[in-house]
Length: 470
Image (cartoon, rainbow, N blue to C red; front, side):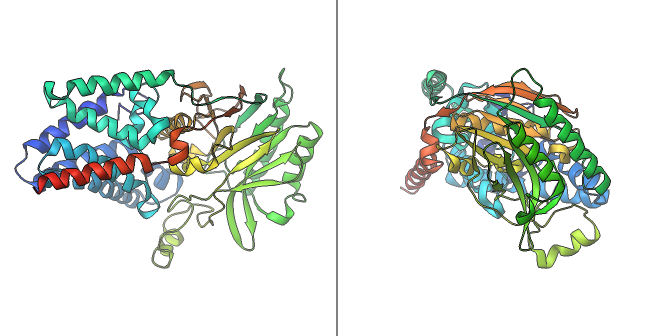
């Protein structure tokens, strides 16, 4: 885990994979390679996503033993992808040629199977400091994964591929000189508000009222800054109410926020639960200066957190054991671009920014990207830092600034190179003020998504298979 945020020691995953590939090469059977892959994957995910236990037990109220089983079960399921990579690589016969291809293809499979869980794909470990991260605007984080695994395999082949290794790292370094986007139109002053509301109290009716007052005062404070903001952003579900979409203008809380924003001529974007025809949506509402209600409803929901998979069989789990409010939401629309202060701002909510191929739907129209989140679900763990690193990857892929407004951290401003320019400490109530350029331009990844790297990988796998059967 030292290769990922908050440590950013990007060489470690390369050498760890080199060690695993070496062991696969030395095994006597595909079954043995699969077992090694499973053990590696199980340790990797237990170290990396153990915080799911916190979400289920500490916040969700699930009994400790059930939360432990569920967390271990998810880690074991994800480790099967690494086991399959080992098994297939050994069956192909040429492990060091097959392993980088199969590892990357199986990470792609993990991105969409059962709605997808691409958390901790190896490519993220290179963002933003490794030269390999510079491939992200061309082939996305999946392509960076392939560069990592290829490097690991070539290290083991001594001088045979070291010239190629030098070439790929030199090319990656040179790509840092390419500017994929440029400024267009005026920069916007943003205020990102971090309320630090405990998740266990968030939906209590009395606390909800206090939270609304708190954010209202934070909004007023933002308007007293030397540089008044053009846009104020509150986090995901910052106002903990379910509000009918037809009554937003009349609801006492949203009406008060909207009237103040209009009087100050500032664009305000707030997170609420929006209700329409007995369907509930995790929404961001734009109120204030530009007039007219704009709304983005989250489209990629978190399984077990925001919707119940296999509801007819698992409804008992929520009724008797897991107490997560608003856990049966509906999917919204896919494009989250809102017009704010004359610019297109692409919004995504929480978990959505883990899916680069979905964020690119907002591009190239969006001049700035914004992620709103509530990472209080993770407690005092490394998960919020991992989530920050995924946002850094999206900034690199899109060549856009990515702003993060979160409830407890990490609220941050990330430039188009994936670098954190400014950030708030986690678990404090504070506001981040930043002037952000509006950018235009299209990266190759924005144009074609994963199709370029996937086409190359499938072609390479086909040629490798054909060579094996000659």
